[in-house]
Length: 398
Image (cartoon, rainbow, N blue to C red; front, side, top):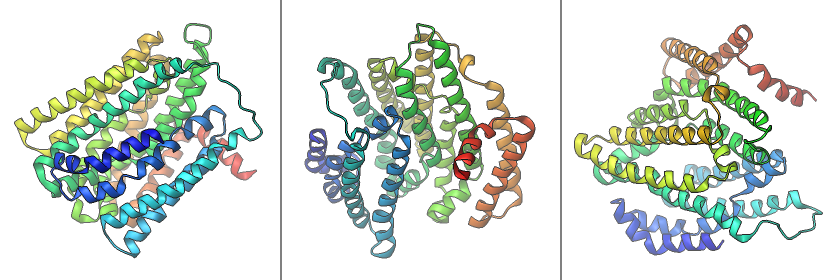
């Protein structure tokens, strides 16, 4: 709450500075209203880690579902039914944050019912040595994230920025899958040691998680890449068709994110490296962003720079983790499955896109055909979808 208060104070006092930085004076009033949100948001962070560590991810699923429903009801419904304005959206966001804060404080205590608190054997110094680099990385992560936003907002105007911000978004399902796997793996990996006989156990768990990521992420990404125009048209209307190119560009990153090195990086305590790489990439993004703007003067190139740097981050972190753990990429990554699924997903997506009409019904129908086709092909190629679906089906049928 203390950190949230500091951040909120900065937003309130620094609103004119931030709005001037982005070349948008209309941001001042919105930022000042939004300033209360960090106080309510920061204390709720960390619930994922608590539930994953205590193997109570079902509580995490319930909490996240309720949280998203609150956000949807409080933000979207008032904008649609009361007033279509940014002020109404921010008011809804504040209301959702207040409700979510109370929800999070209640959920936070559930794993500890009947548990007597004891003094931790982890010293304060150990805690800060591990966590301060993560805080530094988070701060520089913000600097990294906003480099392309700054150049596009500042130099290309509000209309182009709107097209960019609507299109340059992560596919929601992919983010949920990646973060869920990471949250579960971090406490598991922290129990084992790469320099002992435990390594084979870690490699097997790591390989299985990457295999599941490939099965879930690659088909969704390929479908969204091919149907980018239809998806943007459905979400934002055909007025923002130019956003589809940004959306398609952002989707490319997901083909590299199937291998998540973060759980290993954090479990081996390499947080200082994590901070240093964020500083390097943040500085690189701002320098490269300016060079690209100066040479080409095209917002798409600034977006591509952002994607390239994100891919570079995956490669650098991956090389570091594999070297540190004395592991070869082929030990954890099934190249054959990846390329097979990639080819099948693109062929199916292109074929379906070629024969259906551009409408929301055809988009839904096309995704159903695509999903069923993948499952039918799985019967012949044994890609591994049965291992994912069987536990779910058994649980539903109980």
